[in-house]
Amino acid sequence: MYNNDGLCICTGPDILRMRVFEVFVVKDNAANTLRRAEKLQVILIGEGILVGAVGGLVVLLYRLLLEYAATWLKAALDYAKGAPLRIAGWFVILMIFAVIVGKLLTWEPLISGSGIPQLEGEMTGQLEQNWRKVLSAKFAGGFLCILGGMSLGREGPSIQLGAMAGKGISRILDRGKTEERFLLTCGASAGLSAAFNAPLAGVMFSLEEVHKNFSVSVLLSVMAASLTADYLSASIFGMKSVFQFDIVHSLPQSYYWMILILGVILGVLGAFYNWFTLKVQSLYNHAKHLNTTTRLMIPFLCAGVLGFTLPDFLGSGHNLIEELTSGEMVLHMILITLIGKFIFSAICFGSGAPGGIFFPLLVLGAFIGGAFATFSVNCLGLDAIYVNNFVLLAMAGYFTAIVRAPLTGIILIFEMTGSVQNLLSLSIVSIVAYIVATLLRSKPIYESLLERLLEKRGVELPKSHGKKVLREFVVAHGSDADGRLISEVEWPRHCLLVAVQRGEEELIPKGKTRLRASDLLVTMTDERDCASVYKEMENICRFKGFWN
Image (cartoon, rainbow, N blue to C red):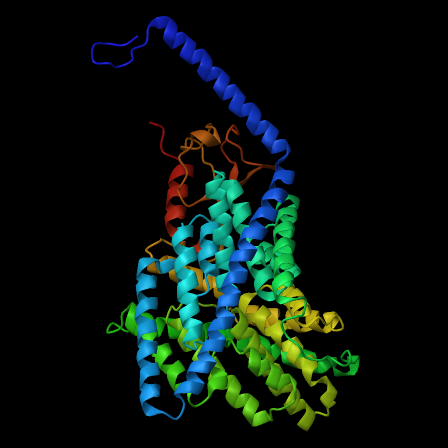
């Protein structure tokens, strides 16, 4: 029925029919939900293939664009070299790049850095990325940074781009939050797989570092995404591994003591890398006279100077690996390149430019291994044919010490080099580096970067509460706890009741457990709250007097 104003009004029978319809809709939705849950594993595999295809294509386009950027950079430097006006013009272009990238970072701040901390923040519900803005801004910003010669990698951004492709598919298909996290993980796996031609490493990294869960459902969907992206990558870039250098023989066990020494060195230097990277980032952030754009001008200017003096330092450093493993470098040149690349990479990444540390840190690890092996050949009797073995080992160990993802490091190096001869030695050096970095109390780099990002965005982080303290309290006759159920007692806020000792019997505390006089209560609290909790517990358990 309609009233005089043309508005619909409902009579009693109408309302009854609407309610019956609503019940059937709810029942129908519940039935659909149950049917979907039964097929969820198969659905996730299908969605994983879809995310792998879309995310893989997005990352492959990004990878192709960056290869063009590296080619155009070399052409621009060759054209400008020796001509002062052209050199000046190139520096003007670099400043324009800095302004554009600064505008992109202002428009979408979450494209800064590698993007892996942002993804981890979203997986834990602490961040929310706009997938459309991140995709477009990361593409443009990453391209301009590589075109300008910054020492940044494509792998971290590829992981973020793949994850955002997964999020876009989730939103288009109207999936819930739980399923969306599965698709984010699938996208991350597809991104790394397409960037490195490393499907197994893509699976392992997304599970070990991003999802932090190895359930069958997520494993199958992530594998589907990673393999789909790898197939597309192989179709465009071929089946060849990223690094092309020869490992002639497996390392004999007589040299394994050197692996232990190398692992210790990598653990120490990995901890130093994390500290130095965060320190440079802090220096940028605390420089009050710098804004987003002027911070970016520093690495772009450095890239301009290096482009006409030490052009090998520019970009991710793939060419440096080829020079190192071909035996063209002597020890002092290896050390100079290692130090220079280390500092320049930190300057680039610390500025907040959209680009990753994944590939540059592998390059640094390779040079640490190269320096160690060259020294060992000269002083410790190492056969020169095993130099490349130590380059390979150091890449995995250094990655493990910094990222703290040993399985990913081992599988990644195995896939990137195509060598299966060194799995045992890779495992040993990774474990040693992991232990040393942990003993030095160095946090995984992406975890530290996420904390910095959340702090900068005003997200309150849980603070360290110190050690846990166990205390015992006796329930007195006439106390607030005497004769009452545990659920009826108002316990201190920062206190956990872990046990109730009644004579020789130990009870598990439950809400319906009734306390008695002489019961011994065992509580656990943080060290910082110990004093306040003690006072409150004493007040609960002490005798209050006969008038109570």
